[in-house]
Image 1 (tube, helix red, strand yellow):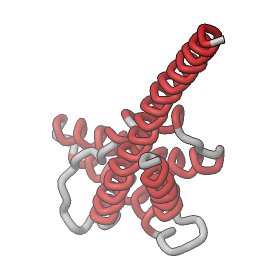
Image 2: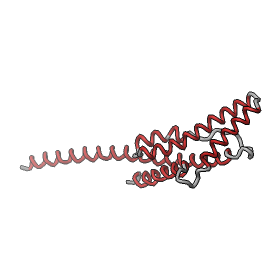
Image 3: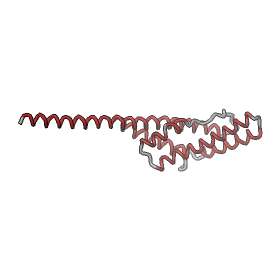
Image 4: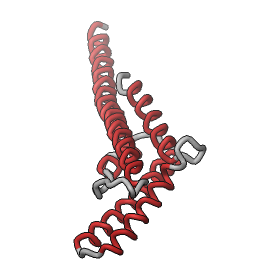
Length: 170
């Protein structure tokens, strides 16, 4: 009888140990994914803020502003990874994608303006600056409306920051 109890205790201990090891391994990976979403969305939110600031400057061509490309590193690097490990709805993905679609158009216009400047084509440079200002105004004029791409994209990032901040401590 005591030998049977010994073996039963050993088997129960081995099963509990294996279950605990599997759970801890899963939890470590799950926490890493929550950290990825949290940091990615935090970087994306700051990048959105910087893009919007620069778009406001570009929307007014009479105010000379540098022709720098708008930042897209967080969107290109962290957003796809956050989408893969987070729980994003189609609407949320579309909200951020739509904002960055305009950012991409502005960046292409800035590249063309830079090429016109390098070619010393004053007419083409003015046309490109005018196009960039038009695109920037398209986003800026929607601020505060229901179609505000910036506000919607920031709201998505903030929602996932809050969720990931909570979940990563579980």
